[in-house]
Length: 358
Image (tube, rainbow, N blue to C red):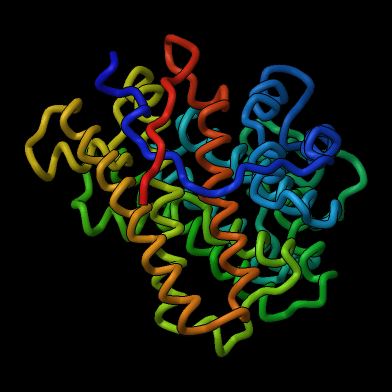
């Protein structure tokens, strides 16, 4: 139905680029996911491959060192598997079932991927060495203390990601990442509760919580690492920079909502989409709500350019890498979404975009 075509969106007016190592990193990250036990060799691996984690990372970080591109890609792979478990496998509508796994993953974050102490979480099936949570076995060669946690392979892979960030020797960035991943996990419980109760959140509530459920903030933190010059702590708390960062996260999440709406609408009702929330808030039919959500994105993109110019005038060259990363992310999200099988509708494609005219 043309009412839901993403041609209503303006194309971000930034250069589209892709890392030369994207295809190589895609293969390496899929092998990493297999080695961590996140996927097997069947449908789960195929689903992760179609998600295009490296494609998104390669467009967000087109000139990053390959090791840091891999780190970002592996984070995307982890987030995609987590989202699929919640969205497609039913766990995301059962908060009482999801909570123990979230608690175990929080434990991994608390120890920054290090070994567990004597208070390690026990697996749902019981003894050490049993299959880990949600039917996904953990691969060989992992720390025994991690092998038997409630989080299973998700915990093993998250611990690996944390340890690799620890190795970067950027403690401020590490703490920021851990905090953002913690907020992401807790926000999943909010989503699960809403689904269980068939509750559509209010607009202000949704806008705030969507910034956490999308996993964009931790992804931006590793993108800043990949660009090599994360903002200094004093700069990080600049209100103008914080406002631009929030708007970047909003635009990425709203873009995701618009591209995924048709797939989510055809699969099952889910209250966590800007279109659904606007329809409920304003009493619109879904076609009108889709157009309204597209307007939110377009207006936000125009506002981004205004805020970016003001930040440059205020802060000067010190924020150049930060802004380059945000521009790349907005463009990458749009380009990746246009191509991603993850959001393909019944027609298998999308309509050409509108060009943005600032």
